[in-house]
Image (cartoon, rainbow, N blue to C red; front, top):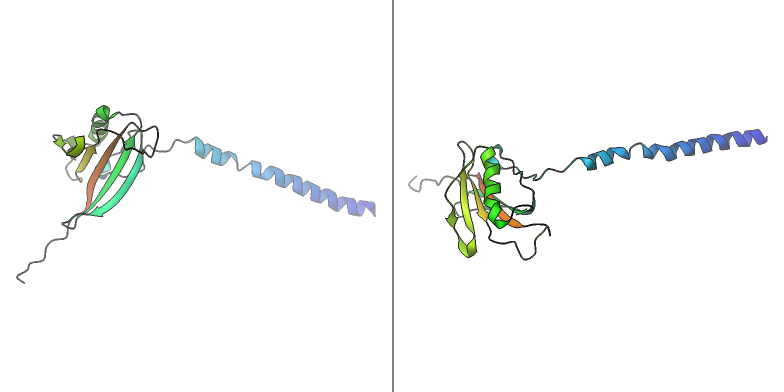
Length: 162
């Protein structure tokens, strides 16, 4: 009689001990995923450009212009480039995708913009800021740049005479 009670308890104990070891096997899978470095930027730029400058996205907005065109503006906080180095870093990245830089255009409060062009791709306008925001999203940030481009053309105006 004792053996009849002892046998099921041993089977139950063996089953429980197997369950304790089972979760240990899936644990290494998430650890290997964590070891893979995250991309520098997950933002898709036009013209197959990859923004591979170490950075963090501060804001990402899609908006409509007065003419009805749709644009996207992404503000990056650059983690390694100072304000003096930011233009060279962005220009080098966009040049790898075939973009050519235009002449800098002065803006307000020390900001300036550079238009990058590429055949059969949307133009990208980069606005460089002279200093970082008062409250950066990343405390390691050294400078800021905003990239904007058109995602949808403005609708054509209907003829008023018809």
